[in-house]
Length: 417
Image (cartoon, rainbow, N blue to C red):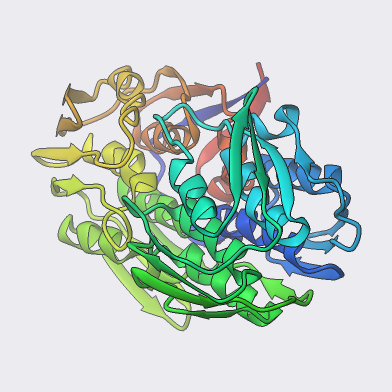
């Protein structure tokens, strides 16, 4: 098992390029099931979750080939309709093959999903929507079994905005008969990216990026070449890396408009952010001002940036309150930040962070994907040496982050434990 060794205290400088978005690529890969033929997906990040998705698609009959950051998926012979527990258990997004298989073949059997231990993330909204489209759903022995001769358009109102549910039903409804309306839909940029690909495939979709999405079902879709959007969470993590080290870095291949809520908070905290010709320059101040945040569905402050922002607030001037409104178990990084000498008190879904003058390097353990990034950020700012273990979480969502940070001047290496 690998770990990271970080010797903190260095100001980051230079330029870094953001990889393609994991959270956009995963549903895009699943969408290829809808159209027999050869798809070419570019700007794909090298990540564990991507490899898992490829294994799922191959188990269903797809032929997948990779060349650099380009992946070719031939979905012609996707005839197996079962995704087994062994493949699905490690990654929640695997359940997104259910709707496309059902839409294409009229039946599917998919294991209930796994993923990070950041709280309950049931798929009840996914299944409620598929039922509304006419599917017969049974849960047996840890599997979802779905059948439908022909999915039919319906009006579906989500109990709460759900990114996976919105993506799932948008894919399934693309081949349904008639019109489907998704109300209280999630609005994340990754949903817009998936919709753009589906439209290129021949789907008729309006309203992606708003809370009401209309899908006019079509009889068939065609394979496409498509480029995945940049990863906004990786970009945000680099922005905080510049801020927490009082650094000055340039970030290429990012879309700043996808991070408005984070940008406003960072600017209020004293960080200079300049977007010029597609490259974003981020310059951290000598001292960060404390800021309160509340995580919300997009376009609110992203839950996937909460842990990283908390790391920044540990060295801010004053006290901040961080409220986590999306996942109930997403403060597991707090106990590890305390090992750096941070001053954090948790009560319910709120954490009060009192900034300290300096963090001190320590051995720490990652508990989930974004917590991994949080601990790296703290290590970059801390005095002395930090060891971050259990970084297999990190490899699910950040492509070669230690190499990218080293390219900005960080003293960080990956070693075998």
